[in-house]
Length: 324
Image (cartoon, rainbow, N blue to C red; front, top):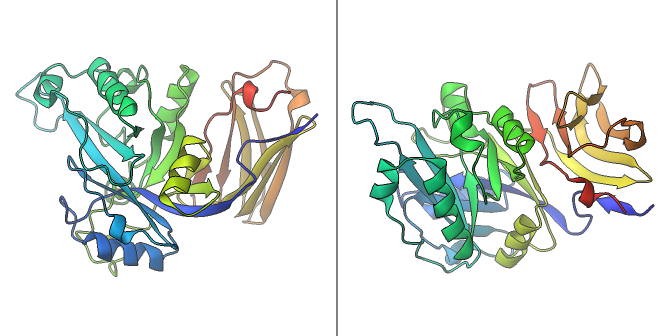
């Protein structure tokens, strides 16, 4: 049998924050200040996803950094005018064209009055056709239940960790919501992001909403084109700490290599769970034998944890991605 790379073996890993807010909307840092802050922490990619505006920053992209042109669009529920804190879709859209400065036209007021997955799917379809990748953000902060996301379609990414809400409200996870979605037949990639606004100084580490959750991108080159191609190839995963270095299947054996961790876990769509565990962060690899599965899985996926309670989570991989 041939070797199947679930994450490409070509290129390099780049650390990315795919959800951020600058002075172009309600953030406290300018885009240039944000670039410096994130590069100082080892990041190579930041998506400037300011609220309801699309502002390219090609002047920030260089051989060591890529500034992704993006926007965060919100559609809130205005069907009940007595509600104080409304459920709301917050969606990131990443432009494939670095210089794009206009998002698609859509009837936002009409969508608010007809708040549903139907209008969100219409918006995502229109954006996809216009050259954007769509990401669904922070389901718990958005006050969403299963009916709000389980029939969503056309999304490239699903935010499994939102750093700002994890730090500020202890509810920044979207991992269970992601599992519910993939069990119902939609397979976006996993992403993790800060959603930083930097109201508190970077030095105030207890309250700072930067450098908490991030997406790892495996790209052939650190250019705008290279990063977008890697995103389209789905060679990404979300984490708030653990690092996955390689993932492939050879002769029906899954091989996963990580930076030091204490849990490496294999999962399918049902209860099937295989694990390699340690008392400390001493694990760096694991193998799982697919021939031991009694039923062919609809998908397989992986989670890596450490003793700090942090987790990396891959997307779901379909049998077509590893079968000869």
